[in-house]
Image (spheres, rainbow, N blue to C red):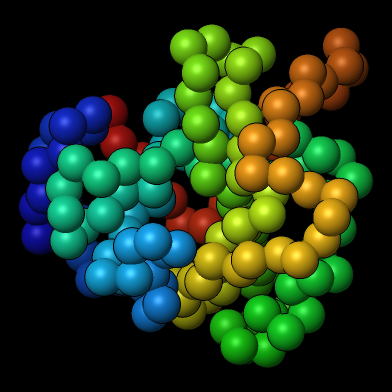
Length: 158
């Protein structure tokens, strides 16, 4: 199958590439099928692209790029719902807002997306934690560290 995207152009994919979110995203429950695309190799950000409405794209990243102490324990009920068998089968992303430059990019840590990388099933989780916000500032890595990248079987495009 091929979709035309405003950023990546023509994207060829198969059913096995699809990330399925039966409940959709908050505010967009009708969008249930997405692709995760890499911008470039070893980049901390990826694109979450709707296959149902081309042109609807989201910037996503690992939540530890915003808060290194991000607590994954909240995902226990989500792990069960997604039938995650091991930690290696789980990737977590946050929706990001690009604010003109990397240092100003923020991430929504209150609404992370959990992905079972084996089944390609995902769901957005709304946290009730008072310690996270919808606009966490991107942290700047120290000289001896790099940004965190999560794998969820993203397509290599470009």
